[in-house]
Image (cartoon, rainbow, N blue to C red; front, top):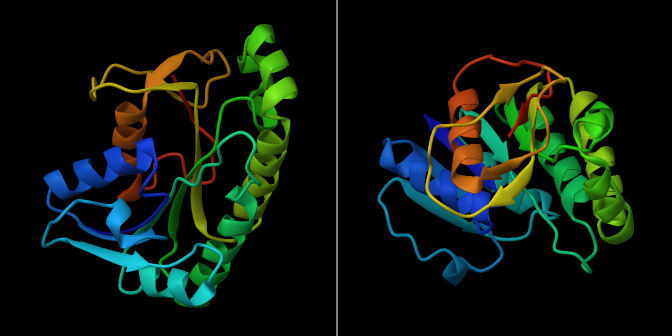
Length: 204
């Protein structure tokens, strides 16, 4: 499979990149600085540029089969998720692939009740702008007309891929901890099929 990857330098993006290359996929990854991705592999093409630049995004999408969008913002920074996703969606609508898997967060949209009250308070106090931007991001994706799936992970942790996680659209799934490598594993599994098409599965 030929994958366009946005957010390749974040924890989940790096995990997805490593897993995709491990299984022999071809990856085109967008990065602001080429040096931020130290990976060297014949199946990896690094596109140096910004996700807000339509030309760079279009270059990353060229000749790919599916798109993984794992954009993230650190607290205190201006959220990039909705603005970057708008550019990606626009370029996909013009000439890109149709399959799009986007990672947001549990607590967004109708998953708010799956998050324990203490973490909801934390989100309101320290992550409010980011969560609001993720809401806008999800709306852009849902209205895109593309073959989208939105993945909503619980609290992200570092650590190896375990394969032991819950994922699905059942509202009984609660926002627990999940390794970034397991989120990457789930996203990678969705890029090649239509499971959860036009749905918002949680992973925890």
